[in-house]
Image (cartoon, rainbow, N blue to C red):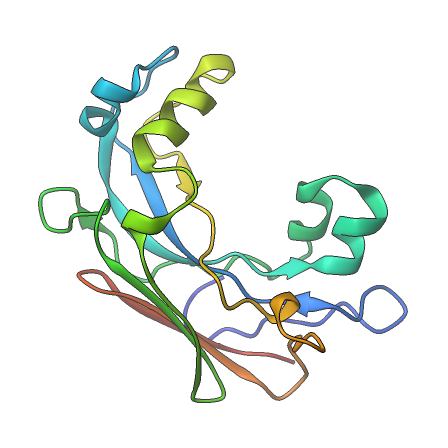
Length: 173
């Protein structure tokens, strides 16, 4: 969904643990398979902003990451696309606020898997095509990490911002 559009809660009978995840989106410009990490950045067209909204209880129940990330209106993305020469995706700040409270603030250089490794790993078994978007993973500060967890609630506003790219902001309904 786009900035300003609502992240819609699936309902308490479906999930009660909806979380935010500020992430850099890597946009593939030149496809390939079996891409080496040393060549991976040559396949990147650019970057965008992603909020990889996740249902933690579905993730845990099904033991498949994609099950908790596939609800309607999850994964707000954009609104800006910047070229790889306009932003150093390997070293930029990723931030997230919920209702104006900063929850995440970290550099992409501290990701568990750097962008070249992600591209190499994915392209080992999946052909990447121009226009594909890879979410890089999220830094510390997601709701599940708080004790007790601080999941999204109806009425919340989530803003994800990445230096050199821009921000996306969505209400939660």
